[in-house]
Each structure stands twice: as structure tokens, then as C-alpha cells.
Length: 302
Image (cartoon, rainbow, N blue to C red):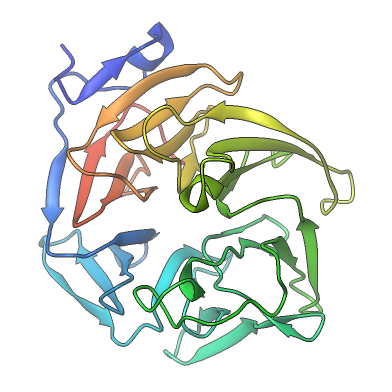
């Protein structure tokens, strides 16, 4: 029997949830937890605590939590590249960085057409090694999550960073505040969240879906995939079946690839982001405002 932590809207979700499984709180005392990334080789999770200007580390082997990096340049989204290195979006510096195996930090992106980026927010690495990231203005809107300043670009784009040349291409330019993003399992679709509603009722709070061209770079389409019903979507991940697990105001909402809302994992705080991890990639780690949560599922992350 499913616990009260799961809400089933469609029978397809019942197959993804596990009986007698509860959401676990792993840590609290954050101000705005974001950007979880799983490191299988070390069996640990790294995530950002943006206003506290630090990155945290949770160890699966003993449940301990420690500070991974401080200051973190108000880091937000994190992911791993194809070699297992940490890729981080940094608000304060307006950059996307990579942490090398020796601990040194390489700046991968800082400017577009000679103008400083706003505050890179979330990133995903495609199988060809390219890094796709969003660049809204949250880190420059106030002093709380970065340093307040005017946008040099004057807009908020989605970018692709070429792994061979380092060239930056704006792949989507019609967003108010592009936020979380994720590829479908076959990488033929790209889902991108727009949290423009944070800056006014006239702006969207939805998720859009794009078709990825045969060149692996160009995007077409961009229709609305889902509207956020409670709060706003933020970050998301996709499982091996193509289901989208996205943050919302009441937990983690799960959408089937056809756009149907099929279920909800209840979290007692507003959720910012999530990622799959654990030995079998069947454990969903959830950043919920002040706390880090996890829950085991009957599916695996891509």
C-alpha cells in the first residue's frame, strides 16, 4: 500500500511508487536549497544553499553532512559531465564552471557576444558533451542570491556550450525567466521551465517542450507542455521511461511524456529541484527550501 507521501492521479504513477515507502528528511538548516547532483563513485550528493553562499555534501555511507565549498559564489544548479566532473552555475560571478579532478575550478562560460552573462541557473550535459544552461536574472535582481546589477545582455536566454570549441550559442531566446531544463531519454526533446511569473502576473509559469534537430543543436517547436498548478515549476529530472519529475509548490509532480499529470510526491516545503541517485539511480533526492529530502521509487533516472 502506498503511503500518504504519494498522490496518484493516474494509474501509471502507481507503478512508479513503492509500497510502504516514506519520504525521508536527510538534512535541514538551509535558506534555499537547490541544484542537487549525485556522484556515484563517492556515493555522495552535492547541492547548493544559495543565500548562505555555500555548497553542501551528504554522504550516503554514513548520512553525514558537511560543507563542500564555501564561499560558493552563490552557486545554484549543479550537474555532472560525461567524465564525472562537477559542473556548476554561479550567480555571483555570472559563470558556468567545472571542478576538475584535482579540485581546481575552470570557468567554461562567462560572456555572450562580449557581454557578461546574467546569473546562470541550471545546467544539463548532453551525451555529446555539450552543456546546456539557462541564464535568468535571479542572481542579479537583489543581493540575496548574488550581487545586484544591471543585465548587460538585457534578456534571459538558454545557451549551448560547445565541448570542443567553447563557443556559446543562444538556442532559445523567447523566455521570460528560463529555469530548469532536461532532455528526454533519447535526447530528441528538450524540456525547459519558464518561471517568469516571479516577476509579474503577466508572465508564464509553465514548462515548454522543444524538438532537437538532427544536428543535435537547433531547437524547434516550444509549445507549452504543462502549466504549474501550485506555485511554480523550477528544476526537474527525467526517468528512463520518459516521465518528468519536476519541482512545484507542493512537492515533486510527475508528468508522463504525453503531458499528463500522473502523480505527486508530497513535500512539506516548496521544492526547488531534484535529482536521481543512489547505487541504482532509483532514489530521488529533493531540495525543499530549508531541507534535503529523499524517497525511493520504482524507476531510475536517465
